[in-house]
Amino acid sequence: MFLAQYSCPICQKVLSFIEKSYRCENNHSFDQAKEGYVNLLPVQHKHSKDPGDNKAMVNARRAFLDNGFYQPLADELQRLYQQYADLAQPVFDAGCGEGFYTHQYANNTNTVYGIDIAKNAVRIAAKKYKDCQFSVGTLSQLPFADNFFAWINSIYAPILEKEFTRVLASNGYLVTVTPAKNHLIELKHLIYRDAKQHDTNKLPIENLTLVEEKEVNYVMEFNKGTDIINLLSMTPFAFKATEKLLDDLKSRKSFTCQADFLIRLYQNKT
Image 1: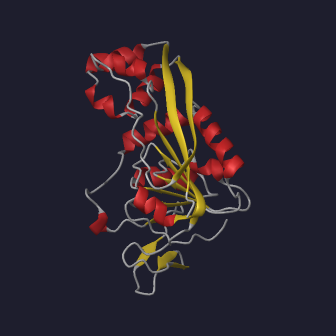
Image 2: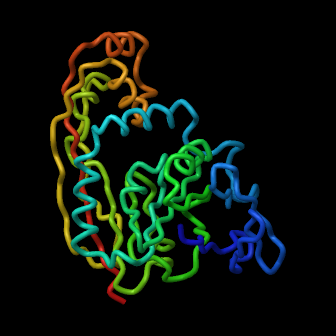
């Protein structure tokens, strides 16, 4: 395990790890939790008492991902990483959640970091994946030095180009994953009378060079209602589902639904 290198989220000075705490020269201190993560989200940076996904949402996503339904996406991300990356350089998963994608980048020579604003998710990630460095934090003010990462992932997370570019090394790569046109379209049809395709025209990154763009599309087959409910719980349209629909989905023995992802790989050619 490599020692994590963080910057203080309050004063941006280097944090040193001393006796299970991260401390800067201005004496700002952040204790390491028993699970191994560190909370680098000061109270003044919070917009609510418990920001991010709640415990139920985190557990639903964890169960769904652990069942492998999105593994084809993870496999394609690994293909890109193996093809383009310097495998010994630091990796950052922005909005890491429970660490499902994060830990798949860890090897014997690199350091892999994951940050999420949801403490519930980070606690699970740190407990399960000891070969990565996890912290609670906000993507809008990352606790890292400039040009620190050679590889950054943003998978279904807010894409903050200015801050991501700040911590991205020269010639480093940024990968974004967003919904392609038909992502979960069958599930959407059950909820919305006029279910629309996702708009894929907008480029979330303006000042980096687009190196590769690929759509990953496949059909997921479900034979348990719990898996369908877990999938629904991961989506923003879960709040639109009626009790009648929830009961129907729970009782289903079969359901097919498209997974449709748009992967874009960018390079910082500065």
